[in-house]
Amino acid sequence: MLKQSWSILTGLAVAAGLAVAPAQAQDYEWPDFFTVITPIVGTANHSLGVAWTSEFSAQTQSRARVLPAPNGYSRAQWLATGEGDIAMLQASDYFDQMDAVEGFAVDAGGPTDTRVAVMNMVTPWSYIVRGDSDIQSFTDIGAGTRVALASSSSFLMSGVDALLAYNGLTRDDVEIVEVGNYGANTKVVTEGRADVAFTSPLSGTSYEAEANPNGIRWLALPRRDADPEAFDRYRAIMSGYVPASTVSGVETALGLYMDHAYQANHVRADADPDFVYNLQKWLDEHYEDFKDDFTHAPMMSIASMVSFLDAGHLQPLHEGTIKYLSEQGLWKDAYQARQDKLVALAGDRVALYNAAMEAAKADGIDISPENEAWHAFWDDYKAANGVTMSYGEMVMAD
Image 1 (cartoon, one colour):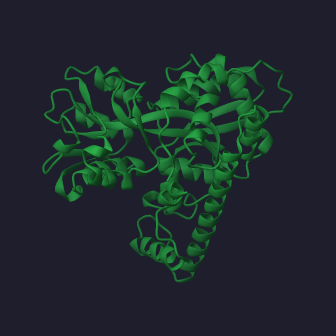
Image 2: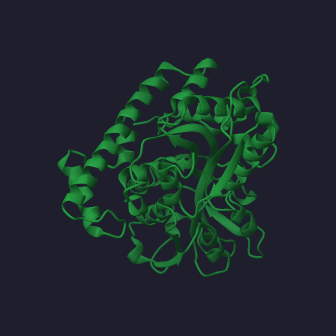
């Protein structure tokens, strides 16, 4: 099991010291343009993408185009099919993609060998209620609670299921309020149409919600020792997160104990190593040029990357990124050992998925998220090949 007794605060506190390198001339010939896939407009990751790509485009002969995707499934699929070159994925997205759950159960966009190129943010996630709500903690969720559910990303649905699982509940035990996108997920709470929603204190929608007349409140993550069985039910669904005190985001969230996710920009495994190396180099050497362009841009640092590695990285890194970290004296033997295991896991999973799709098509089964026969076939195929754990469990077990 990965050791998570580390401090996000420590990693971010040294960001300035690690992230600033002496300015050097770039003799690399950048591509004419490349595309950065982000979540929808209004999210912190979209704003961060606009901040650094604007500075990059102003300083180089290349143009970085920001392409907001409607949901997490599209981000992964656009990266896999080459519609975009870089896409933000946090560990829970990556795990769900490698398990081909929900909207990831497609021909192009299911398990894919992608690698971390550069770090984006360390993002807190929790549950929001209105300031005048009677809900004070996880255990106040019960029969009749109106729970917002956004199906636009699998990790948003997992957040809901994990909260319910903590209390021994399922969606059938509460009143589900379905919404179409991430922004509406918060608005239905502030408008009084839902009691609780899973979201991030960094999002623009959270800042808007905090300013509403009723205010907002966040539910702190319970410590495991308060109820180990309940916490383990929660964590079985919410894998890929690390609990810590919240240091960024809306004022109402600061200091609260929440789950945090390392959100990284992925590229395809076969992406040009020179491009990835020089992108990480540019972001490091020009950190001072963009870190003040957005509230959370300081987290896009080499320090955050090192913190990710020290925590026991959950996704493999691209060789271009490893080359840059090695040159800076930041790459360790322990990181490489972990990297080798993650690369092997990813390769095995992609090969298994491709074989399953070929076998399913031979049986006349349509590869579609809406086709229950395909989901059942994939589950049976994994079991027949000795895969008994989720991909996240396999990663966390090493």
